[in-house]
Image 1 (cartoon, rainbow, N blue to C red):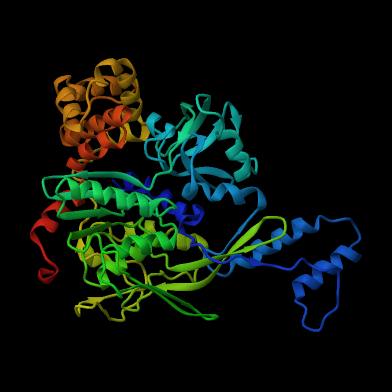
Image 2 (image 1 turned 90 degrees about the horizontal axis):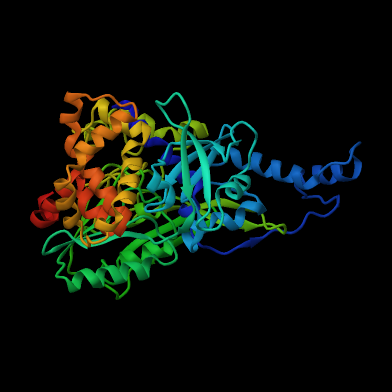
Length: 536
């Protein structure tokens, strides 16, 4: 089981790479460096570079020196103050801004290896079985690992016109050889809302993957649609949401809180306290609310959950969030490179800071989730170690804590009940994704007649889809394991049906099916329909 959970952990690197966690702010312009002008208060770095430019024995690339110096300076500040080269600047905004053609992954380069940190739901890579945690070693038979490849070079290799194909060789934990995939590039949709549907007559479900430019409008539309279908309760799923624009989060929270309620404030050593309050929107004021979070919910997601919790507006369910509470501001340079400099901290309405400690090495900081897993935090609430024992109080007088994410009101442990060694083997090899892709291709004419998730479940069970998959897995080298098959049958069968439905009708098919094995979601339905904050 430990191996299974570890395949999630590379996702936390997305929190450092995907600048879905930064907020919009004013752009500071830096004056260009003057060639060695001796001034009484001139900084050592400018002075030194000026001398190198004029006096060094050989010709040097001053721009390269400045870039390396900037990276070195930021390294010892905090994990989220980051230098961005001019080549990477335009690409980094795409996850929050618009559409592009490619394979649908977010990646990071660590130790000269390209790690997949997130796979875009419904995109080309997910449809063939590529997962977070995979390492891309080859692209079209060209080695890209161990050659000092840059982010820009990787994007050039993976992106391309829709309809074109790219072959990748994937190193996957537990597999001795590279796993080959052929991906057909397509347009990558960058919607914020992955799913919005009614779970029953009164309870609606909205899953938000990021806080992007279009989030607020998407959220308004989703709420209006579900209200028209009778929604009186809302389960708002922020699990795996790494953040995004702060103003998008504020606008969403504004729909739930009474006018004048404090949503969040920021403050830094050189920045005065800046407060953000709710206005008169309140389209969701009468909805009973549950917000789902987990260890991958970060930044703007934590602002949202913290505001709901501190104002006693809803119930927070799941596991402790990531703990990213630093505000970055862009500093632009004349060559279009930039720095995201941390200038303040976020504080929830009760006054708690959600930022986890970072006065250690960057490696320790980004291994935090693995450490949480190792000491049992994903399974037992009592195993949670908080960094700040100070008591803060919600508007209703409940005690909450800061110093490392948002603590849920109702803790739900990670569900491992359906896992087995057999399940581990098929997931490590990506068998379920490849099977579903091939099955969909062979049976698309019949599957295209199905329009709703329930229709897929009925049809696929009638086709004995699970037995077909076990035969397929055996041909792929996964031996039958009677005990493992029995233990993991519901988990595997549900995933197969959900993936096939997604291949045909996208997320409208996937989420209503996969919910049956989502323990946190199913318990949240009971909570939102039966509990009140007074009973916590």
